[in-house]
Amino acid sequence: MVSWAHPTTGMGDACAPSRTPKPTDLMDWLPAMLDLGWVVVATDYAGLGTDGVESYLIAESEVRDVVNAVRATRNFPDANASSTYAVFGHSQGGHASLWAGTLAPQYAPELDLVGVAGAAPAAPLADLVSELWDTDLAWLIGAEVSVSYPANYPGLDLTDVLTDAALGSYANLAEDCLGTGGAESEIRSAFKQQFYVRNPMDVPAWAQVLNDQSAPPVPADIPVLVTQSVNDGVIASASIARMTTQWCAAGSVINTVWLGPLRGSTDSSSVLTHVYEGVVGGAIATTWLEGRFAGEPAPTSCGQSAPIIAASDG
Image (cartoon, rainbow, N blue to C red; front, side, top):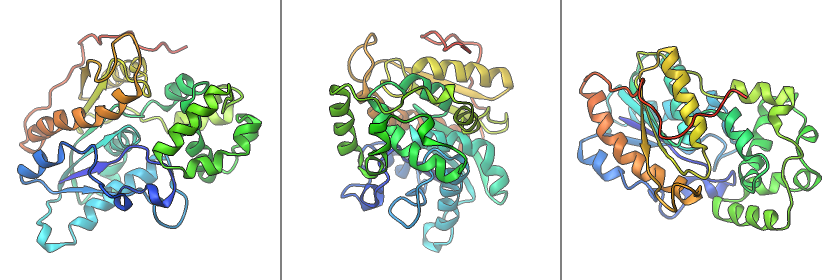
């Protein structure tokens, strides 16, 4: 089985992938997985399309969702679903997938997790926030974080980090689906409006929770695949280079596959490149997962140089 963890969609009920006209949009890799005889399951995260608040970029909730999707599928006799599974996710879903490598074996010991794969994963949240806090994307991603994080960490104070404009609109913005939210973020940026008054990483309480929710190195018994483009306009390539270097040093068995620009050029970051990384990453993940399901030794890129300079600890 493969459990698919989807990217950011927006928090409104209509934004849940299962409620959209084509839930398999940007899942071009799906037919290849099905042709191999695999069962593929895709969850809407809890609170997305159902009662409650989506725990956006909250690891424990996301991992429960991708694992419980596997459990639920195994309750359908005609699915013939195995207890052997992997997790593949893109962007927000990459955060869920890489965290599954750490949390899922303890949460679901009755299942056999053979590997986790993340396409442009939002795994190093501390770096991601530092990269995006003063950009127009903060209106898109920051709005959902501003709903999710105080709901899960009641001590957080939004007035420490949000501008007056953001305080008056973040809750409504978080409900917008991706297309609408992206358009509004561009408009607000054009009018020189900022979402954050300062980098949340400069506020100790926020820095603590963002570090807590940044994915730790996955134990060596769970192989990891990461695919990342050099000109991703959402997930900074330098932060992924730093993360993978740290994980290699910690003993993770990680294979990082670097992609050229999928849109635009190497010298200019592209949000569209980030969108299509899920498609290309899925094709690479399909081949990589064949080896994991076959019990083959997992490849590693540790010791190889990344094509970009890693982010510094500063």
